[in-house]
Length: 76
Image (cartoon, rainbow, N blue to C red; front, side):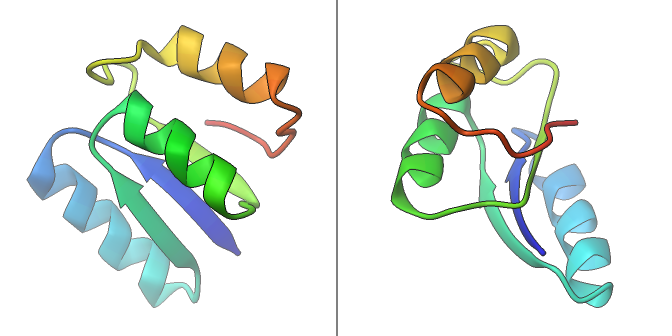
C-alpha cells in the first residue's frame, strides 16, 4: 500500500514510518499540508494519514482540496 503521511513532529513521523514500512507499506512523508497536496498531485496514494495540526495548510482545508481535485483515497 502506498501511504501519504503528513506529520510535522519529526520523531512521531519517523516512528510511524518505521512501523508502516515494517508492515510492507510504501510511505511518502511530508511535514505540512502544502507539501502533502503537491505529493498527492505527483503520484497516486492508497491511504492518507494526516496530522490534526498540520502547519501551513490546515487539515480540513487539505482534505477539502484533495477531494475537490478528485482524490478519493481514504484519509485518517
